[in-house]
Image (cartoon, rainbow, N blue to C red):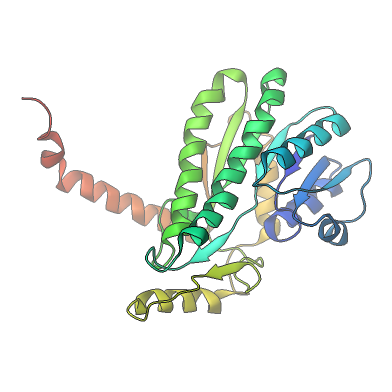
Length: 276
């Protein structure tokens, strides 16, 4: 059955792989990018099946216009995929307020804008599937990525509560927490580092260097990820959380073990704060 998809950040990486797969299988796709021409260059011209949109996701009015145009063009909304993301590395001390807010604008507030503007349509339909792409860093973060992790933790948290809030409305929610996929995410064009770097943070510089050298060798296959995302929308009961990639699954498993150890080790202290 053909579905109508609204996908952000679709001109490259996982978003682009998914758009191409959806179109090949006959689905209807509205895709956003900061540049409509880059979408057309990557995917092809607008058609009865494909609606390329130039959208500023940090602008409520721009997002609302894109959602409205998608609904007017295709008549419904089945899947909302918040894929646009912004990677930034550095310690909290090194990253300025402006750099930090830019990360949250793209990773968190843009996601909220899309959900907020799509919800009236989904509520009226009593159907739909919202898929938010977070990161394994939103559950088990690494050295040097505090702000990126904070924004992705926010996406995970809002997705978990959103799922509860909209369940009775017939709307499904999934948050994806991928590991490293072989996309352009680790290239100089996509990944930003703190403009002001402090020499004391050598462990952070080492961490960032490791990620730079990882580009082109990531274990995750974007085409396989696109297959998984497409399959999720056919499930009657899709997962709320899905760790994508063996690396993500291993990091999550390790984190769960650490959390359980802390719960066990400090249980008596936790309970000691109750009224006696």
